[in-house]
Image (cartoon, rainbow, N blue to C red; front, side, top):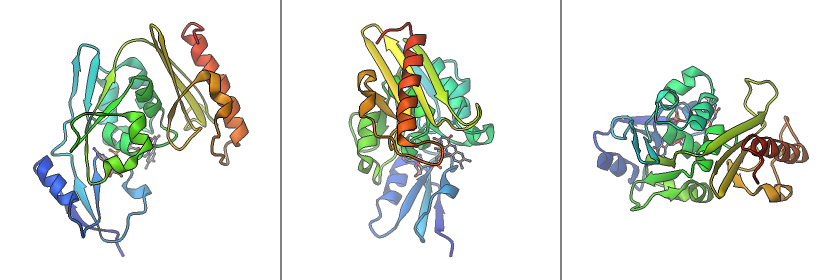
Length: 245
Ligand SMILES: Cc1cc2nc3c(=O)[nH]c(=O)nc-3n(C[C@H](O)[C@H](O)[C@H](O)COP(=O)(O)OP(=O)(O)OC[C@H]3O[C@@H](n4cnc5c(N)ncnc54)[C@H](O)[C@@H]3O)c2cc1C
Protein backbone atom coordinates (compact mmCIF):
# COMPACT_ATOMS: atom_id res chain seq x y z
CA UNK A 1 0.00 0.00 0.00
CA UNK A 2 1.27 3.48 -0.86
CA UNK A 3 1.98 5.61 2.22
CA UNK A 4 1.04 8.90 0.52
CA UNK A 5 -2.60 9.20 -0.47
CA UNK A 6 -3.00 12.91 -1.33
CA UNK A 7 -0.87 15.78 -2.62
CA UNK A 8 -1.87 19.37 -1.83
CA UNK A 9 -0.33 22.49 -3.31
CA UNK A 10 -1.87 25.35 -1.26
CA UNK A 11 -2.11 28.87 -2.65
CA UNK A 12 -1.53 30.64 0.66
CA UNK A 13 0.20 30.01 3.97
CA UNK A 14 -3.20 30.07 5.72
CA UNK A 15 -4.45 27.35 3.39
CA UNK A 16 -1.29 25.32 4.10
CA UNK A 17 -1.78 25.69 7.86
CA UNK A 18 -5.46 24.72 7.58
CA UNK A 19 -4.43 21.54 5.73
CA UNK A 20 -1.89 20.70 8.48
CA UNK A 21 -4.42 21.46 11.22
CA UNK A 22 -6.98 18.75 10.38
CA UNK A 23 -7.28 16.63 13.51
CA UNK A 24 -8.11 13.34 11.80
CA UNK A 25 -5.53 13.48 8.96
CA UNK A 26 -1.81 12.66 9.04
CA UNK A 27 0.05 15.28 7.01
CA UNK A 28 3.65 16.10 6.21
CA UNK A 29 5.13 19.31 4.87
CA UNK A 30 7.21 18.89 1.74
CA UNK A 31 9.68 21.55 0.55
CA UNK A 32 12.45 20.20 -1.73
CA UNK A 33 11.15 16.68 -1.19
CA UNK A 34 14.60 15.08 -1.06
CA UNK A 35 14.02 13.41 2.30
CA UNK A 36 10.64 11.99 1.28
CA UNK A 37 12.04 8.67 0.05
CA UNK A 38 14.22 8.16 3.09
CA UNK A 39 11.52 8.45 5.77
CA UNK A 40 8.95 5.88 6.78
CA UNK A 41 5.68 7.82 6.45
CA UNK A 42 2.56 6.34 8.03
CA UNK A 43 0.09 4.92 5.48
CA UNK A 44 -2.52 7.48 4.51
CA UNK A 45 -0.20 10.48 4.81
CA UNK A 46 -1.24 13.61 2.91
CA UNK A 47 1.57 15.80 1.57
CA UNK A 48 1.39 19.61 1.81
CA UNK A 49 3.79 21.10 -0.74
CA UNK A 50 4.83 24.57 0.48
CA UNK A 51 6.91 25.68 -2.49
CA UNK A 52 4.24 28.11 -3.74
CA UNK A 53 3.69 29.84 -0.41
CA UNK A 54 7.03 30.14 1.40
CA UNK A 55 9.66 32.72 0.51
CA UNK A 56 12.71 31.72 -1.53
CA UNK A 57 14.61 35.04 -1.35
CA UNK A 58 17.84 35.98 0.42
CA UNK A 59 17.80 39.45 2.02
CA UNK A 60 20.47 41.36 3.92
CA UNK A 61 19.86 44.16 6.41
CA UNK A 62 22.96 45.34 8.23
CA UNK A 63 24.61 42.25 9.74
CA UNK A 64 21.48 40.11 9.44
CA UNK A 65 21.02 37.80 6.47
CA UNK A 66 17.56 36.23 6.15
CA UNK A 67 16.97 33.16 4.01
CA UNK A 68 13.37 32.36 3.05
CA UNK A 69 12.79 28.75 4.11
CA UNK A 70 12.37 27.72 0.42
CA UNK A 71 15.87 28.94 -0.54
CA UNK A 72 17.47 25.96 -2.31
CA UNK A 73 20.94 25.04 -1.10
CA UNK A 74 22.39 25.64 -4.58
CA UNK A 75 20.99 29.21 -4.52
CA UNK A 76 22.29 29.73 -0.99
CA UNK A 77 25.78 28.74 -2.18
CA UNK A 78 25.63 31.16 -5.12
CA UNK A 79 24.12 34.17 -3.32
CA UNK A 80 26.65 36.99 -2.64
CA UNK A 81 24.92 37.80 0.67
CA UNK A 82 25.54 34.33 2.08
CA UNK A 83 28.35 34.34 4.68
CA UNK A 84 31.34 32.44 3.17
CA UNK A 85 31.34 29.67 5.80
CA UNK A 86 27.66 28.89 5.08
CA UNK A 87 28.28 28.83 1.32
CA UNK A 88 31.19 26.42 1.83
CA UNK A 89 29.27 24.12 4.18
CA UNK A 90 26.06 24.15 2.09
CA UNK A 91 28.20 23.07 -0.88
CA UNK A 92 29.22 20.01 1.16
CA UNK A 93 25.57 18.89 1.64
CA UNK A 94 25.19 16.07 -0.83
CA UNK A 95 25.63 16.16 -4.62
CA UNK A 96 24.41 19.03 -6.84
CA UNK A 97 21.27 17.06 -7.74
CA UNK A 98 20.34 17.19 -4.07
CA UNK A 99 21.44 20.81 -3.54
CA UNK A 100 19.33 21.96 -6.51
CA UNK A 101 16.19 20.66 -4.79
CA UNK A 102 16.79 20.72 -1.04
CA UNK A 103 16.00 23.84 0.95
CA UNK A 104 17.36 25.54 4.04
CA UNK A 105 14.00 25.06 5.81
CA UNK A 106 14.00 21.32 5.07
CA UNK A 107 17.60 21.02 6.24
CA UNK A 108 16.73 22.72 9.53
CA UNK A 109 13.59 20.60 9.98
CA UNK A 110 15.58 17.40 9.33
CA UNK A 111 18.16 18.32 12.00
CA UNK A 112 20.56 15.73 10.55
CA UNK A 113 23.33 15.05 13.09
CA UNK A 114 25.90 15.04 10.25
CA UNK A 115 24.85 18.29 8.57
CA UNK A 116 27.79 20.67 8.38
CA UNK A 117 25.47 23.43 7.18
CA UNK A 118 23.60 23.16 10.48
CA UNK A 119 26.90 23.49 12.37
CA UNK A 120 27.59 26.63 10.33
CA UNK A 121 24.13 28.01 11.11
CA UNK A 122 24.74 27.41 14.83
CA UNK A 123 27.97 29.43 14.85
CA UNK A 124 26.22 32.16 12.86
CA UNK A 125 23.58 32.47 15.64
CA UNK A 126 20.69 31.17 13.49
CA UNK A 127 17.14 32.14 14.43
CA UNK A 128 14.22 30.24 12.93
CA UNK A 129 10.89 31.93 12.16
CA UNK A 130 7.97 29.52 12.58
CA UNK A 131 4.30 30.16 11.83
CA UNK A 132 2.19 30.95 14.89
CA UNK A 133 5.14 32.40 16.86
CA UNK A 134 5.73 36.11 17.25
CA UNK A 135 9.49 35.82 17.72
CA UNK A 136 12.01 33.59 15.96
CA UNK A 137 13.41 30.60 17.90
CA UNK A 138 17.14 30.15 18.44
CA UNK A 139 18.23 27.07 16.48
CA UNK A 140 19.46 25.15 19.60
CA UNK A 141 16.01 25.68 21.18
CA UNK A 142 14.33 24.13 18.13
CA UNK A 143 16.73 21.17 18.28
CA UNK A 144 15.78 20.72 21.94
CA UNK A 145 12.02 20.75 21.25
CA UNK A 146 10.84 19.43 17.89
CA UNK A 147 7.21 19.82 18.99
CA UNK A 148 7.63 23.50 17.99
CA UNK A 149 7.17 22.25 14.40
CA UNK A 150 3.92 20.35 15.06
CA UNK A 151 1.38 21.59 12.49
CA UNK A 152 3.70 24.56 11.83
CA UNK A 153 5.92 25.75 8.98
CA UNK A 154 9.38 27.28 9.07
CA UNK A 155 9.14 30.49 7.07
CA UNK A 156 12.72 31.80 7.27
CA UNK A 157 16.13 31.35 8.86
CA UNK A 158 18.17 34.44 9.85
CA UNK A 159 21.86 34.54 10.70
CA UNK A 160 24.33 37.15 11.89
CA UNK A 161 27.03 37.64 9.27
CA UNK A 162 30.60 38.73 9.91
CA UNK A 163 33.42 37.47 12.06
CA UNK A 164 36.31 35.18 11.22
CA UNK A 165 35.30 31.59 10.41
CA UNK A 166 36.94 28.22 9.90
CA UNK A 167 36.00 24.57 9.55
CA UNK A 168 37.67 21.15 9.80
CA UNK A 169 36.50 17.58 9.32
CA UNK A 170 37.39 13.91 9.15
CA UNK A 171 35.63 11.47 6.83
CA UNK A 172 36.43 8.10 5.28
CA UNK A 173 37.27 10.00 2.07
CA UNK A 174 37.38 13.78 1.46
CA UNK A 175 34.07 13.60 -0.47
CA UNK A 176 32.27 11.37 2.02
CA UNK A 177 29.95 12.69 4.73
CA UNK A 178 32.17 13.68 7.64
CA UNK A 179 32.32 11.38 10.67
CA UNK A 180 32.90 14.45 12.85
CA UNK A 181 33.18 18.05 11.64
CA UNK A 182 33.82 21.34 13.43
CA UNK A 183 32.76 24.85 12.43
CA UNK A 184 34.02 27.93 14.23
CA UNK A 185 33.34 31.65 14.22
CA UNK A 186 34.89 34.40 16.26
CA UNK A 187 33.70 37.95 16.73
CA UNK A 188 35.46 40.14 19.31
CA UNK A 189 34.82 38.58 22.73
CA UNK A 190 32.80 35.62 21.43
CA UNK A 191 34.09 32.29 20.11
CA UNK A 192 31.49 29.79 18.87
CA UNK A 193 32.32 26.21 17.97
CA UNK A 194 29.76 23.71 16.65
CA UNK A 195 30.29 20.02 15.97
CA UNK A 196 28.54 17.39 13.86
CA UNK A 197 28.63 13.66 14.54
CA UNK A 198 28.78 13.83 18.33
CA UNK A 199 25.10 14.13 19.34
CA UNK A 200 21.58 13.65 17.96
CA UNK A 201 21.86 17.00 16.13
CA UNK A 202 24.80 19.32 15.46
CA UNK A 203 25.56 21.19 18.70
CA UNK A 204 27.39 24.24 20.01
CA UNK A 205 30.17 23.13 22.36
CA UNK A 206 32.42 24.58 25.02
CA UNK A 207 35.98 23.75 23.89
CA UNK A 208 36.95 23.28 27.56
CA UNK A 209 34.29 20.60 28.11
CA UNK A 210 34.69 18.24 25.15
CA UNK A 211 35.49 15.31 27.45
CA UNK A 212 31.90 15.39 28.69
CA UNK A 213 30.55 14.58 25.20
CA UNK A 214 28.94 11.16 24.80
CA UNK A 215 28.77 10.67 21.01
CA UNK A 216 26.62 7.90 19.52
CA UNK A 217 28.78 5.17 17.93
CA UNK A 218 28.29 3.62 14.48
CA UNK A 219 30.24 1.49 11.99
CA UNK A 220 32.49 4.46 11.13
CA UNK A 221 33.57 5.34 14.63
CA UNK A 222 33.20 4.48 18.30
CA UNK A 223 32.10 7.02 20.84
CA UNK A 224 35.71 7.37 22.09
CA UNK A 225 37.00 7.91 18.54
CA UNK A 226 34.42 10.63 17.89
CA UNK A 227 35.27 12.34 21.19
CA UNK A 228 38.95 12.30 20.19
CA UNK A 229 38.06 13.77 16.77
CA UNK A 230 35.96 16.46 18.48
CA UNK A 231 39.03 17.62 20.38
CA UNK A 232 41.45 17.43 17.43
CA UNK A 233 39.09 19.23 15.01
CA UNK A 234 38.10 21.89 17.55
CA UNK A 235 41.77 22.63 18.17
CA UNK A 236 42.41 22.88 14.41
CA UNK A 237 39.57 25.36 14.00
CA UNK A 238 40.74 27.43 16.98
CA UNK A 239 44.29 27.45 15.60
CA UNK A 240 42.99 28.65 12.22
CA UNK A 241 41.06 31.41 13.99
CA UNK A 242 44.27 32.66 15.52
CA UNK A 243 44.61 30.41 18.53
CA UNK A 244 42.02 32.18 20.67
CA UNK A 245 40.06 30.01 23.10
C1 LIG B 1 21.00 10.89 -1.18
C2 LIG B 1 20.68 11.80 -0.01
C3 LIG B 1 21.72 12.47 0.61
C4 LIG B 1 21.46 13.32 1.70
N1 LIG B 1 22.51 13.98 2.24
C5 LIG B 1 22.26 14.84 3.25
C6 LIG B 1 23.35 15.60 3.81
O1 LIG B 1 24.49 15.50 3.37
N2 LIG B 1 23.06 16.44 4.84
C7 LIG B 1 21.78 16.59 5.31
O2 LIG B 1 21.56 17.39 6.23
N3 LIG B 1 20.76 15.88 4.81
C8 LIG B 1 20.96 15.03 3.79
N4 LIG B 1 19.91 14.35 3.26
C9 LIG B 1 18.56 14.54 3.83
C10 LIG B 1 17.74 15.67 3.14
O3 LIG B 1 17.78 15.48 1.74
C11 LIG B 1 18.27 17.07 3.46
O4 LIG B 1 18.22 17.28 4.86
C12 LIG B 1 17.53 18.19 2.71
O5 LIG B 1 18.29 19.37 2.88
C13 LIG B 1 16.12 18.39 3.16
O6 LIG B 1 15.61 19.52 2.44
P1 LIG B 1 14.28 19.42 1.56
O7 LIG B 1 13.88 20.82 1.23
O8 LIG B 1 14.44 18.47 0.44
O9 LIG B 1 13.27 18.83 2.65
P2 LIG B 1 12.01 17.87 2.43
O10 LIG B 1 12.46 16.53 1.98
O11 LIG B 1 10.99 18.54 1.62
O12 LIG B 1 11.51 17.80 3.94
C14 LIG B 1 12.36 17.23 4.94
C15 LIG B 1 11.63 17.29 6.29
O13 LIG B 1 11.52 18.66 6.70
C16 LIG B 1 10.15 19.05 6.82
N5 LIG B 1 10.10 20.41 6.27
C17 LIG B 1 10.63 20.83 5.10
N6 LIG B 1 10.50 22.16 4.97
C18 LIG B 1 9.85 22.59 6.08
C19 LIG B 1 9.42 23.86 6.53
N7 LIG B 1 9.65 24.99 5.83
N8 LIG B 1 8.77 23.95 7.72
C20 LIG B 1 8.56 22.83 8.46
N9 LIG B 1 8.96 21.59 8.09
C21 LIG B 1 9.59 21.47 6.91
C22 LIG B 1 9.36 18.02 6.03
O14 LIG B 1 8.08 17.85 6.56
C23 LIG B 1 10.20 16.76 6.24
O15 LIG B 1 9.93 16.18 7.49
C24 LIG B 1 20.13 13.48 2.17
C25 LIG B 1 19.08 12.81 1.53
C26 LIG B 1 19.35 11.98 0.45
C27 LIG B 1 18.20 11.27 -0.24
